[in-house]
Image: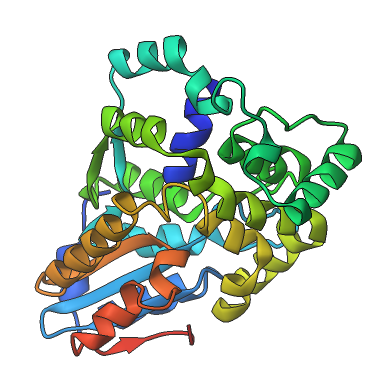
Length: 307
């Protein structure tokens, strides 16, 4: 159950004042308010209105504070909100995990890490085992990576609210219509994970080892870059790279489908009147051939920080 929670967490993250948004300059005021929150954002001006894209990272450290109340203020005056993918988990999915979860947390029976990793990879893993007093020999590489990032590097400890949490709460309190960008079934996620060969998670493990080897400074550096709108620095962070190279982001099925779903949802939003505010994972916005690149290629005019 706990392992499934970690996996799902990796995967996923007043009434509208229509008259006010229709007044000259009202949309610009909302954009300025959102930008002052300290979260990197991009705007797409259309004939009908404006789309605000908030680039979210998971677990912003409290030591690199931002101003979520200003994002709340912008949400209050939006006409609609788009949030991340919704995972539909059934009781059957949970029971399946309880009875077969070992297939996700451990390597296949009789196999150990050295059966899959080369000498350099094993040397690095051994050094981390010694450093953290852990034994990863039988652990699924994805679980080892999550352990290195969430427990040893503690990237999600002492963190502030994520942008999605802030916007979701503000929209609920102000009765702003919200929708997930898409839905994924827990059954499909589990099928995908159970079918994944151990070696498919090695790039994730390598990136997680690099982040852990770099130490806790990478957590603060990533958070600071995010609040300073230095998107290339965030994307170059060893921590962000590790999070982006692990399931489900690199999965051949979920990854491309999720990116295209966001492109379609944002394109549809450009035809809507007033203000649409969307909270999008920064990595799929700003990566090469990511959502921003694809929207720009479609001829949309995008204003915001360099990516």
